[in-house]
Length: 206
Image (cartoon, rainbow, N blue to C red; front, side, top):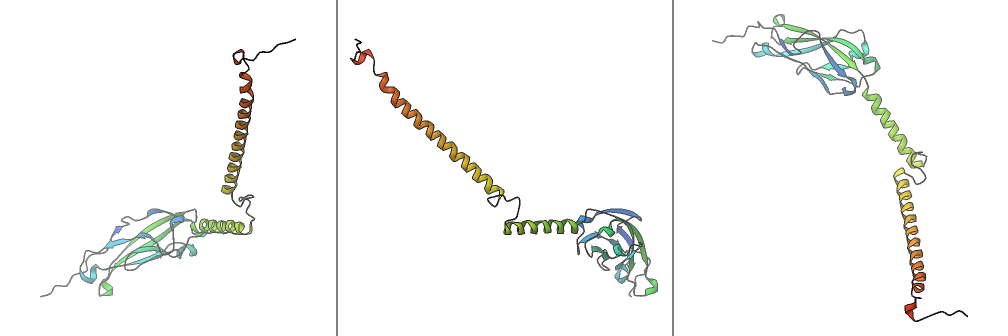
């Protein structure tokens, strides 16, 4: 004797588990195809009655932000479809529906939950493309020699190395000249020091 499950349970949200929860999302972290949130609901029935399907419905008048996310019907993964723009910044609301998969459509039960996203800047696309453009500009300047930061020798590091080497070489030359002068001075003074009474030489003045 087989007893079929009676679809007497509605899906229960595990996450988010409360209505009208607010989630802060930094626009810089939103990338196309990446999961923004994992929606999870369970159904205590068995068989097909325990299977849960998810749906996302926008409650916003902003048509642009409505296309920012998509919800997987089977897995409950809420993913970004593109990089956000300035029009996507702000506070927006969505309705998430979890419905069981009862073979009889009239017996299917669903549970709805409402969530709010506060999407704040900065925007990743603006920063990335800005940095990429600046990097390309510097690379181009180095190739044509017009980069103002490269200096006479084609790079600030090379310039400082040449300056340090020049100063070091000049210092070595000065030290060598001083040593030569001291040696010559000593060679001139030392014979004079031997002209003493003990040397057997005396001077007479007429």
